[in-house]
Image (tube, rainbow, N blue to C red; front, top):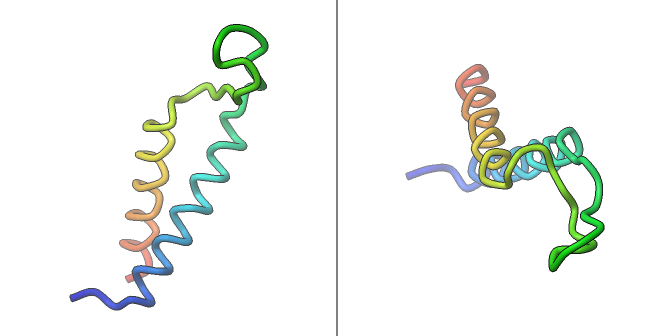
Length: 64
């Protein structure tokens, strides 16, 4: 059974990494088509989520 404080820390860390990655890969706003006005990133959302998960795991492994 995992400690709730550690779980909450990991969730916060994941959200921060994901936000940082979204800023890093942000390319602008789509200006045409049905997705007009939506943000555009150089990586897909799933790629950024996987990268954030990897960063959390690496951080936890380094600091455990």
